[in-house]
Image (tube, helix red, strand yellow):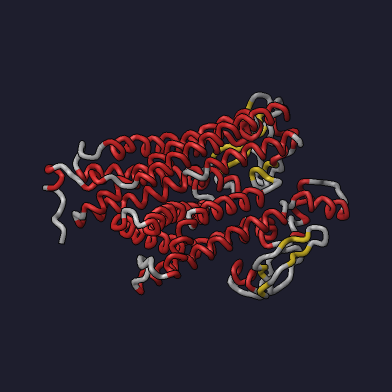
Length: 499
């Protein structure tokens, strides 16, 4: 394999493993705020016990998330040095903000969250919990800002070093391979960079996906306890909170998905065409529910709903969604390949297409899993409403609880599939319409070096994942401690009596 492919595989591997953990910390952080808030409001020791137990799970995911995330920042310098030099002024500012304002906030108050029980007042501890949760969300903001700028660049200009001086280039300047040693992107409007066209849509989508990951972890472990008839009162209370949290997040995620898809239609039409396997531009563009892309014949096989994609993208069935055969435009191709004949431009068009079969599958996996999770939450809420949710004598209840145990995998699959669809759908660009992935590789790194480091990373990440599963299993088997319900007299005086 080429250096480019190996570097992409290495980064995809490290970030995919890392991204198992941050969504859990974001989702659990939000749940901890709810649990501890309910404890302060009601004085019910059950919520105190819940907050302490789930804080231990949060601490585990946070620690492994930090350990797996550090390596990616070094990869920018080792494998992607050309990219780092080209966009360092922009990408670096977002990563620096994440470290200074978000990570330090989260990790600083983490000590109070973990070790402040019975050492600081209950309201101070609740404030620390809120700050940790806010820090986790704030961290996600800056990471999404950096990635969204790569998807929809804004608030920048290009500068070129000429005779030792920086010269601002025109907005329509086309960067060539020869420019990569002298041209770089520079922040022109910081807030336009932060709130680029896709930031808010993608941030909402990512946060809600993280909420679902945390909520379904709570649901899974609680359902496991109920099936095993262990810690029943604790499990029932946790399942109610987790299920309610999952219901809200799942419904909002469906709304967010609609806004995000509309944003992709406006800003990245090639990505949308690849996600849906659309090759021909036709009115009443259908949406394929599932199937596969026949790349050779440039068609998509599977059941379709006529006009649905047009409605989802534009709000009307008559307006067509542009197909890959018309993307990118002739004007775009001519600017990047001056003097080339129309026939040659048509042949070059395919080089600007992402891997449509893979993007299509990842995108539809995300949708199908998301819909399945929404259906599972609806079933859980129905059983809760009818009073069947904890009646393990019913076969249907046992089946539902078993499904809820395994539901923890759903958000992880959907989150991973969504990111793969987003990142692969951007190709061949590392910065959309500005810098190609193939042009961003470090010039001195070799394929053997990447393979060697990839093998070592795989071993270390496998050990970390095994340790995470081992420690998580031990914490689940141990369950909540009875002393978690106990509070010092100084705290009891500050907590309202139970109704």
